[in-house]
Length: 104
Ligand code: FES
Image (cartoon, rainbow, N blue to C red; front, side, top):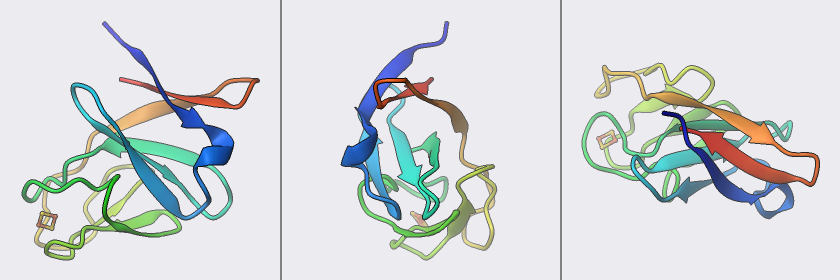
């Protein structure tokens, strides 16, 4: 069964930044430079690192600082080694009142 989990108010997440939404599983929410929201699994598929909490976001490309794997936040697809497995992706809903939810 799907869960609609509150992430943040849209104006709390600046473009070019990310956050972790705790829960099972934890979810990384990213905001690109255009202001659009994307959500993926929070944990890097290479080893154990929280991408929502500590990563480098360059528009739709996130780099894990631990071993420099890169992922496309729109698809979860790994873009370089050492990651070879895609991140799960999740739907993001922005309500009329500006509250942001992830559907997990
Ligand atoms: S843990 Fe992310 S690249 Fe190794």
